[in-house]
Image (cartoon, rainbow, N blue to C red; front, side, top):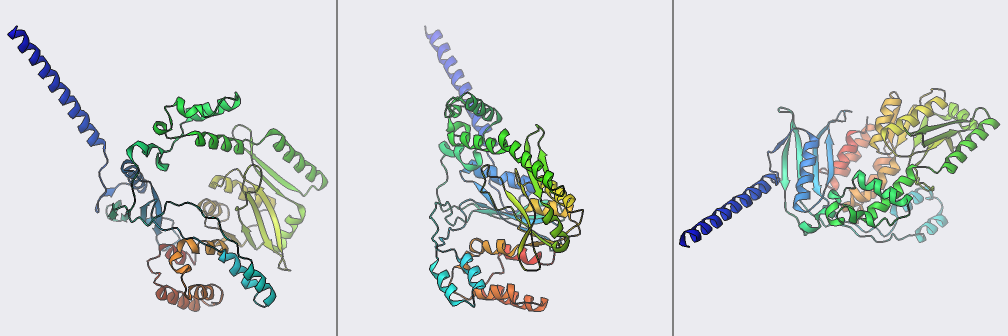
Length: 438
């Protein structure tokens, strides 16, 4: 009995020791898989690797990240030399009670009309309040390109947050962790076709807290599918309209781009009058895609110019599926074909990178300029600390933009503006200044 008892005790101790070793092995494996905190002097092979590492680190620690700013060489090269990654809670939300940009533009047009100025001062619209995650968090990581090692080096790192991080139980629902697999998308579309409850899909994949998507993501996917797949009747109606207009006037030009499945995705049209007007007034063209007021939420992209009466005239327009570089490249090639291959001398757009890439390829000899209206719309976001402050910033900035007709005058006013309002560290203004001659 004693011998059997000792054998049992020995077996239990061996099992316990084996169990302890197994648990130690799992804990060691878990520790090994845990990302280390970034530190100053840490190197990455590529910019993408650094971005992915900080994003994964934030996902692990319970916060999501975003790119705050990037710096480039002073030349026209698009090569990035440094990048700043921040916590998504960085910055502070500024409540704008009035549409000051709209009022300023109307004031400029109505300086000589006192009655109109009075009407404009009364016309003050309040913006609706909205929630925000911004609370001034200072956690960040800056990386610089080391030209000697040709690697990316961490130059600044701070891991101090002024807010609560997301608990481990809820981290799957963080924005950076949200992902809807292809199988879930296919199942959602199948449920939609069979009129089954879409809310069942997340639970079939383990629930929202373990899969990374919920009911809203399923409905958003169906909305995106509807936007991409034009109804047959609508697409056919557009095609019939184009054919009718071309039958009425052979100089009416249209083009339709289809995807690999033969579905219509992008539409372009220009009438004969616009084609003729371009030959006289096509030196400067503006291009914009900010309008989305149609059924499918497709960007409306007009080509616009100015005639000898200072009236806006159309040089064609398009409805686009998306705003990628390949789409813009197709549109610019099609528009150039409709205009007889004549390139504009100057094209004005917003600061869209996809648009910039397409313009460089299709219009290599055309001077690309940025729209001042789009730049001014960013003042309240990029320069909020001085834009809403009671100072002469707006007056000096307005004078620098509109009242300097010589390069030396502009440089003098710009230097005065930067020094007076301590805007030297502002990277957004630095980037605008660096590309002023590009």
